[in-house]
Amino acid sequence: MTRKKSTTPQIDYGLVLAVSILTIFGLMMIFNTTYFLSLNANKPPYYYFARQLLYTILGVGILIFVARVEYHRWMKYSGWLLAGSLALVIVVVVMGNEKFGGQRWLTKSGSIQPSEMLKLALIIYLAHWLATRKENIKTLSLGLVPFAILLGLAAGLVVMQDDFSTAVLIALTSLMMFFIAGGEIFQMVASLGIGGIIVTFLVIQAPYRFKRIIDFSPNPFANPTEANWQIRQTLEALGNGGVFGVGLGESTHKILRIPAVHTDLVFAVVGEELGFLGAVLLIGLFAFLAYRGFKIALNAPDVFGTLLAAGITGSIILQALINTAVVTNTIPITGIPLPFISSGGSSMVVSMTSIGLLLAISRRTLPEEPVETETDYEIDDFRRRKRGARVPRARRGADA
Image 1: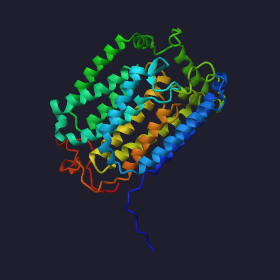
Image 2: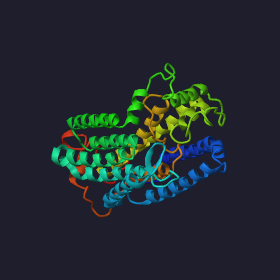
Image 3: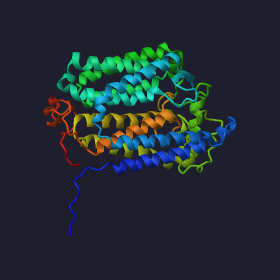
């Protein structure tokens, strides 16, 4: 007897598998890189690992909850989520705790970072806002100008925390969503041009940022100075790993030679201990995550789902690309963590919440009651550039 194939959309188990492997591997690397660090700081040997495990468990719980919630419900709260995140960032700007050269945290432990929450809240709000703009996205007064004001407010507050790299990540993700929603090429060129001028001004205005650019060298070994000492250590670690690595737990650079290696530079230890092959496999996991995430975006039943999935996936992958580019000396040093791998409570919880939203979208559900984005505009063929968003046809209840 032939079974009838179920047409009920299921969550993306390929994405679940990729995130599970990344998370478990991340916990292993945090234990690996912080055991001696804890002892040197007169803390219990499992201090950093236990703290990260706690945030991971919290993140998984939120992921399960968010994945079970019909994702259109977040449209109703998108404004409140953005306003709350902006308020927390303002609190940090006024009275936050300074650590690692930036005033980015609400607590002295350095685990609660509101700019991480702002990244996701802005993606949710922009997905909602852009999905309702329709053809107005192409206009200056109703499209580009309000978008630029909102982006400038969010990114500007993050820059005031001395978190320039996160502000750049927020800007790149937002511009990607604006383009997918139907923004014109000239609007993107104008935005990038104005953004480039602003970035140049901010870099020159802050001495420490300008120094990072000046000190950046494609070959830090040719002019070994104190300024590029950190990146030399990461490159030495990668080179020491060779093709197959020195063995898990056998890194000679993780104890004293690479500062705060468990946060932004953990990829260097991956390359040293697991070699080129291990680093490529890790990058491959992120590539697979990108494939699943953008596939969810393409199969979403409406524009809001497409923009939300694309924004979340783009943010995670851009973050991973920036982190690995820093470790390989492709770009100047920034403070961007490697998602699911680097130590950090806010980063882990927000990343897990983001994956929960992706899984909710993968179910391809639509609300019982019509929402404001459910218009004839959304069920047209979006491949026609003149009609709006650069996304495939949104189908009600369609199967992948």
